[in-house]
Image 1 (cartoon, helix red, strand yellow):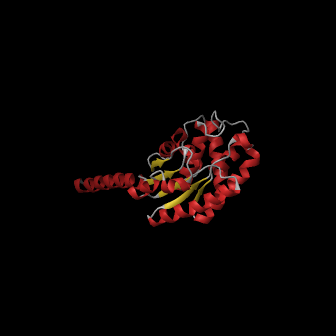
Image 2 (cartoon, one colour):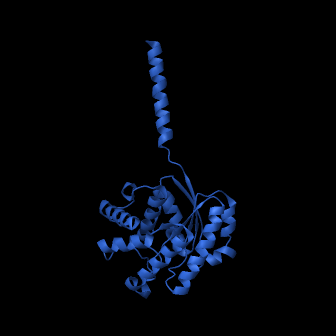
Amino acid sequence: MRRTLAVAGALLVALVWGGSLAAAPPQLHVLFVGNSLTAANDLPGVVASLSRGRIEARAVAPGGVSLEDHWTLTGARDALESQSWDVVVLQQGPSTLPESAANLREWAMRWADAIRARGARPAVYEVWPDSAFGVRLAFPAVIRSYRAAAIASRSVLLPAGEAWQAAWRRTPRLGLYGPDGFHPSRLGTTLAALVMVARLTSTPPSRIALPYPAKTAALLHAAAAEALRS
């Protein structure tokens, strides 16, 4: 009887510890290379928070810089070389003009090659247009630009801009822009982070808890899911 209880106890301990280990998600080390659209509201920190420990993030994101600038001026290449990363997220401005789109494509390709050489996956963070230039008219160019850059560089696309569009189709006046009409509000940053966490961890958006009332959270979940399907 004692032997049976001892064996049962050992099995229970093994199950408890085994379950804990199995449930512990792997941690992704993510480097963000961007500008103030990444730095606003501490997007990397929001990504880490929403992931509940699955993502550890660091950023090199001074204001107003492009991926070309990052290659030579900001120390981003040193950050890439500084440790082993799982994913490196690339972002610059809306890049709606033809020459800007070509620049984004060229430097996304160069960065992606360097990222893969370090054993990491490159990802492209699709943003949104400045509201001063007509959101409806400018958005298609932003999406084309970032999609082309992701395809050319063989990078993961993080379609935050398309998630914003999907949210506005549900609630047209949703406050995703901050006061300057370009940088995101906290809500806009949260939606972008939700898209990133869902894609990078292969988690359905609806399973990622958000710090908002149920109705708002459901809207963001639906918008992120729609963007990730497209």
